[in-house]
Structure formats: structure tokens, C-alpha cells
Image (cartoon, rainbow, N blue to C red):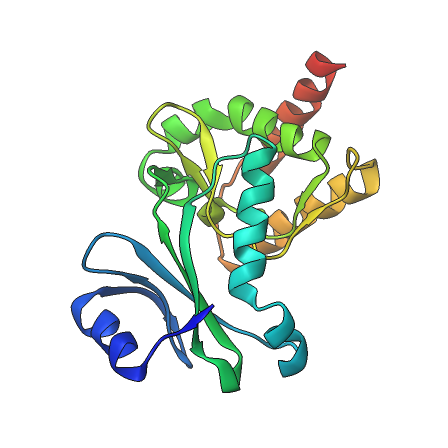
Length: 204
């Protein structure tokens, strides 16, 4: 991975649009050419990060997901922003679509109509052995061709076999906690679980 100079990084920030940030700085930046820059500030031991930085892990996850038929952004480059502080980044083509979070907020009727397809999508991931801890509305996009895709999947796990009932329940608990943290009201979680159960019946 190449090391990005401080000037180059500052140019990205100056000419781009910061889409997400935290107390440490920018997390996602839309660059002038339309690509996205995702910055990873690791909490792991620096030695482990230098051996396998978050940017490479993200790129590897994207490749594995795509290999399993799950749409993700296409990673174009991985780089170091500050290797001494274990800050890595990747540049990727954005995945076209609209987040389910936005659809839920803007068009509740449309979202409710999507529930069966969304449940079937989650079920298909579980059948492929994909355990997505960050399963929530902001990380799933509705693509222009009426499919779905994932955009933030660093903490995803590949189990190599279909998820058992315990992991399925745990995965939906992550979604419940996300909804509670965000104070999301009137989310049809029970209807989603019923649609998930129906999807499992159809495939069995």
C-alpha cells in the first residue's frame, strides 16, 4: 500500500465533500472525481494493523461478498493515511442506490412493500454463512435495478455454512439495538421477522 502524503490528503479534504466524520476527523469523503474515500482509524494493536490494515480487510470482505453474489462498492485503491497511527483508507466507486434508512424515513409505504424482498435478502445472506453484525438500515442500499447491496461491512463474518438459529436471533438483536439507539419509532420489526420466516419456508 502506498503512503498518502499529508498534502495529498489535505487536497482530498479541501476539494471533496465530507460525508461522515467523528471526533478524530473525516471518515467518508466524496472526492472531486465522484469516488469515495473511506478512512479507518483502528483500535487494534498497531502491530496487527500494520500486518493487516482495515483497508485491506475491507477490500477482502468486498471481494468475498461479491464472490457470494452480494453487491458491494468496487474498491479501486488501498493506502496509508498515517501508518505510524495505524490510519488506513480505501478509495472506491460508490454503489448506486438509496439507503433503506432514507426510504424508511421518506416513504414508509414503499418501505413496507419492500419488507418481503428485504427479508428474503437477509435470509439469503444467512444461508450463505454471512453474519453481518452491522445489520441496519443505513448499511443496505436499494439499487436502481430493484435489488440490494451492502456498503459498510468491515465487521462481517463468513461462517462457511448457513447460520444456525442462535446466530440468526443474535443478528436480528443487533438490528433491534440499532433501532433503539437511533430512537427509530414504528419500525415493523415483527413484520420483518414474519417475512423472514416465510422466506425460510419458501426455500426449504
